[in-house]
Amino acid sequence: VWPNMVAQCVRYRVPVVLANARLSARSLRRGQRFGAILLEAAAAIDCVAAQSEADADRLRQFGARKVHVTGSLKFDVVPPAQLVQRGVQWRAGIGERPVLLCASTRDGEEKLIVEALAGLPQQDWLVVIVPRHPQRFDEVAALIAANGFAMQRRSVLGDAGVAADTRILLGDTMGEMFAYYAACDLAFIGGSLLPLGGQNLIEACAVGKPVLFGPHMFNFQIVSDDALAAGAALRVSDAASMLTTAAELLGNQAALQGMAHKAQAFALQHQGATARTMALIAPLLS
Image (cartoon, rainbow, N blue to C red; front, side):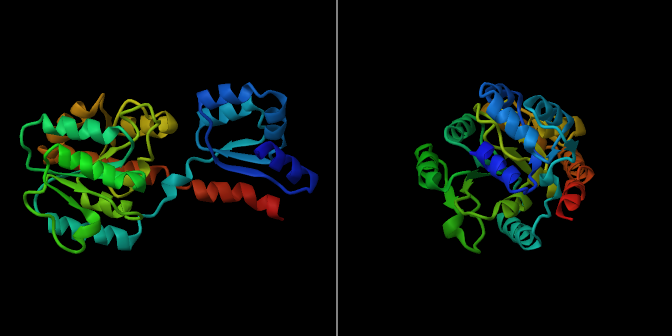
């Protein structure tokens, strides 16, 4: 579709900017199979604002000409104060128990996590599982119940606190992810235990939460590598090692707080992509 769109923009002299651009090595290989039609479209784009040097290099190989590295717009996210406060209130209702959040989990991952949790000795921490797709909420609830865990659902919890014997809280609501991050001590990023490419970890870091993720973060390769280098995140090999690592961190407040500070610093350090992108767009509007 987009080669036709670019062609029509060129025809009517409408500038085209590709902002927050990311191109994986896999996508580059796939795109190059289509040959001239995509190369021509890429060359016609007036300005490309790439997330990283690696993305910029691949975009140039793809045929883009005016490529600039501006960073990821996702780093400029501002955690909504209302949602952060909501999460703080939830945490007060949870009590002193440490909280592990499994955020944006995908099909197949909840089974791995729940079964691995069943194999661990009884823990005093609460696990919050928030599936990425709402159509799977009931399916995940049934999975948790089938494994014998005491569970509550956020959708029916309202303003009430989490019961002391609840092992798993199912986050079956939409638009509250920042509240979930604010309520947790440690966040696991879903989509990474299976070869699904991972999910955005920046929101967790922006709220000052340490991050765990699995071996499959290829859709967020640069940012996940940078988070590891900054000490804001740890990579785990599977669900069992994720829970073991979580147990170690949740039992070591000094290490957990050190990672939390590094996570927030990492998020703040990479801000500014919005301003850099707008500086590229402004001349095209004059």
